[in-house]
Amino acid sequence: MTDRTVCEPRDRWPLGVVAVPLAAFTAFAFDVSHVPTPTAAFAFGVATTLSVELVVVWRALEATRSDAGWPRITPATVVTIGRGSVLAVLAGFLFVEVPAGPTAWLPGALFATAAVLDGVDGRLARATDSVSELGRRLDTEMDALTVLVGAALVVSNGLAPVAFLALGLARYAFVAGIHVRRRRGLAVSSLESSRRRRVIGATAMVAIWLALSPIPGRDLSRLVATVVLVPFLLSFARDWLAVTGRLR
Image 1 (cartoon, one colour):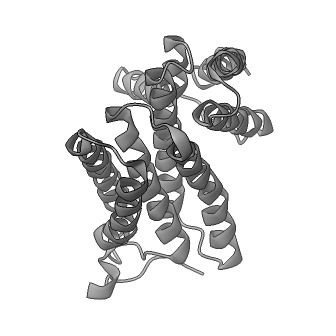
Image 2 (cartoon, rainbow, N blue to C red; image 1 turned 45 degrees about the vertical axis):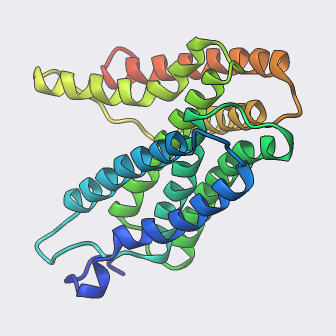
């Protein structure tokens, strides 16, 4: 079953798919966070992240466009883009003080929602026989943005050492390195799927979620983040050696 079709006007609604859940989550976040004065800063963080996500969605659409037209937006793709809406609200907390009281649970809850939806969109795509290149690209980009925003928020709140930010930047540095090698005409090997990579990625997600939750506390969160960072970076280093042909 193909996932591409000639684009009808009703199929051109990726921006709307982002905007509707974003509006709901933003309203919810403003209502429960009780941010006194820096609401404009919070909105700036949400809007900036949303702008980045819109660029990501557009680039993915352009990259998967074929002679038949635009790729079709499937229910699984809607979930993936909706995950970006949750992530945009989470990014707003990068620009305000650490929330207190019951609101302190909100960043962790938003991150957990984004992480859980990561599993939902893939299962939905397989269940509806709508696995597509567009969905794969968007899922990968949203995964990277989720880790980046989560790691940045953890570090900015002092819940992890500054080095933990490397966890969010590693994927982008990896892609940039591959791009440079190809521009220079150097060989780049492909990476096969790896259980190790999935386990380490899931562990990083759990570490970020724990750090954003009030329960573990600052000291334990910093310890967990440091412990998780080491195998994460070693995994990326091993993959880099593999794609550059230095490791079988």
